[in-house]
Length: 175
Image 1 (cartoon, rainbow, N blue to C red):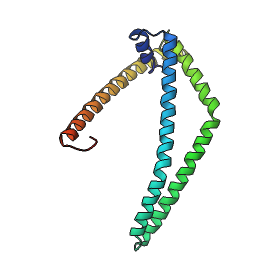
Image 2 (tube, rainbow, N blue to C red):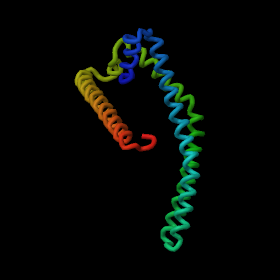
Image 3 (cartoon, one colour):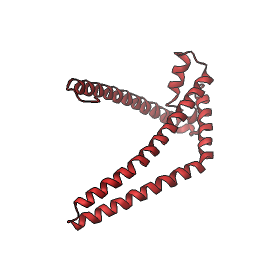
């Protein structure tokens, strides 16, 4: 909630959306983002598993004269099938953990509401003796992390733009 609060503050101050609706909007964005990542991951695994298995069979057929590669290919195929079972079990387990996820989201919303009054509210649980030192260290660390994320975003954007322009000028398809 500490790191997400600036987004809510942006919605509230710049977009003129009420604070409570900003929290709900951010909450919905987080849920949609999480669901999209899960769906994309499952689709990617389901799509890539047969392709990788087929490629392992082709590689195994071309390297039949080397017995060590056959055992490596067989082991890789069994690991691939095992990883698919792990993913299926994980999805089933995550469905049963819905109550934990709902509890987290409930707590997340209340921490966002509390962050409106005091962004460092969670330090009230720390003993007074170390509260000031920890607060200062936390603020310094979060400032450095924010600057790092900003710099990485700028570097990514510049690199992406340069590569896109270069690929376009070199007439790459789907630059």
